[in-house]
Length: 142
Image (tube, rainbow, N blue to C red; front, side, top):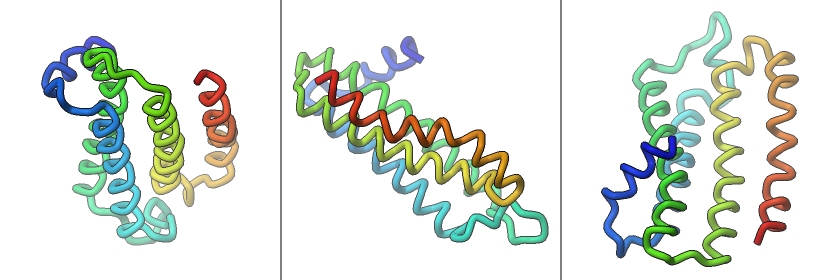
């Protein structure tokens, strides 16, 4: 993804703060969570015999997830490009990345949770465990 991010970062003006790019990507992740929570509040959309989420919602969630991931990758490139690297900015970036992981896992649960909940739980347990350690480990780098 780095060659793609190197191209995308050139679109942003140099006066744009990297933390604003980080926050914009985080807001996209939150919007995805709210959109899925509206259409599937009880995680039953993927279960047989229940009302399914409309196809356009999945398309929007996919596009916005890609945009959020791209903005998260571009913010560091913007840091280096503008030479505006700060410890507070790194903490802000890693903190919002931690919260974004929670919203991403909820989207995964919307897709799989009621179909094979036990297998889904077992496969996502390592990911949930990594969320617990992601933030403290990133603090150690600062």
